[in-house]
Figure (cartoon, rainbow, N blue to C red):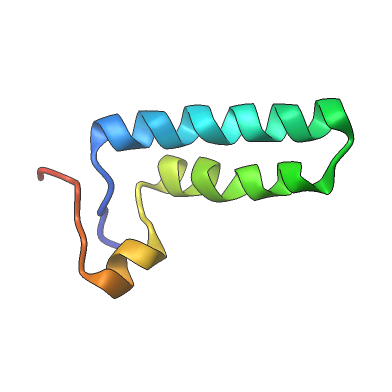
Length: 60
C-alpha cells in the first residue's frame, strides 16, 4: 500500500477516531465502532476511498 494521506490529515483522522470511539463508549453506543475507520486510516496513512478516487494528500 502506498501512502495517500498527508501529515496534517493523519493527525486529524487519528484525533477524530479517538474522540468518536470515546463518545461511543461513554454513551454506550455501537456507533463508536465507526471511529475505527478514521483511526485506522490515519495510523496506516492509507485510505481506500482516496485510492478509488485517485486522490492523494501526501506530499512525498
